[in-house]
Image (cartoon, rainbow, N blue to C red):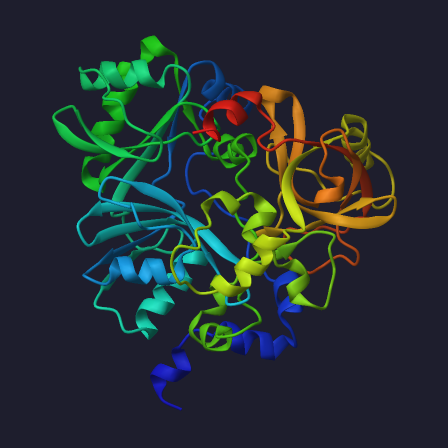
Length: 457
C-alpha cells in the first residue's frame, strides 16, 4: 500500500463494512448534531427569538454552511441533471431551493442555489447535497470547475464570503437607512445589489423564520465593515444580534427540515458514491426509530413539503421513480405541538431518583445530525418526527414531522416516542429511558404569519 493510500481518510463504504451496516454505523457515530460556530447568545435566546417577530434580527450565517462555487459552460447542465427543480426560467440574480434525490426518488438533501453570473453559481448549505453534486461533477463529463469552501469547523482560515441575515418587521426600514436609498421591489428569492458604507453588497430577498428578510453577502474581507454599519444604523430600529442558539431554532417557525437522512446508503449508483465519500461526512442518526433497514429512514420530497419544487420538465437522476412517488405520496409535512405537561414530566425525571428520560434541550433538542423519532397513533406507527425545539413566539415546543395523510388533519392527537431503546454509544447520549409524549397535529409552518406570507411567497 502506498503512503498516500495509507493516509487517505476512511470511506463511507469501508466504514459500513467495518461495523456491519449503515444503521449501526450512524446510530453509534461520534458526530455531533449540527454545530454553529458563532456566539451562542448575545443577550438570551428567548429575547433573540422574539426579535425577528417584533423588531429586526441580525444573524451571522458566515460560518456553519458549505459553499460549492460552480463555474463553466456545463455548470447549469450539471445542476439540471442532478436537481429536481425546473431551470427553464432560472437566470442571473435568481436563487432557488435546490433539491436532489437518488435513483429511487428518495431525498438526498437540499441547499440554496445562487445564480451569481453567467456560467457561475454558488450552492450553499449543509454538505449532504453539496457532496452529491460535487461527486457527479467529478465523475461526469461536464465542462465545469468547482471550488469548495467548507464551514469554519473544517476549513482552515476565513470563509470566502460573509453572509448575514436581516429579518423582522423593521428589516425594510433598516435597509433603507443603512443604504440611504429606497429598497427596490425585489421578488422572493431574487437578488439585488446595495451599497453599504461605500461597499457593494449583494442581497437575496429571503426570510428564514417566516418574517421579511434580506440575506446579505460579499467578500469576507468587507464583512466586518458591513456588519458594523448595520449595527450603527440599527439602534433606532431595535436591532438585536442573534446567536447560534436562537438561530438554530428559526427553521421551526418557517417549517424547514434542516437535515433529513440522505438516501445514499442503498440503491442504484450509490456504492461508488460511498467509496468516494469520507466516512467523517456521514453524520449521526438519533431517535426512537430503530430498524435494520436503512431505507426505513428515507423520505421523499413530498414527505417534507418539497413537492411544489419538483418539475418533470427535464430529465434528472431519479425522475421516473419520483413520478411514481408523486402519483400517491404517502406522507405530508406537519407541525406537532408537544403537550406541555408531558415535557414537564420528562424534565422532572432529572430531579428524581432512577434513570431519567432523555434530556430535552432548549431551544433545540436534536441530539443527532439526523433526528428520526417514531410517531404513533393508537399504538401504530404513522410517521416520523424530525427536528424539534421551542418557539418563544408561539409559547410552544414543536417538532416538524412527516405523517401519513390519513392522520395529518390539524387537531389529530398522536404520540412522539422520545429517547432511544436501547441507548446508543453517541457521546451526546446519556443513560436514559424512553418515554411517550403526546402531541397535536398542526399546520406547517405553525406560525400563521409564516403560512400566509412566507410560504405563500
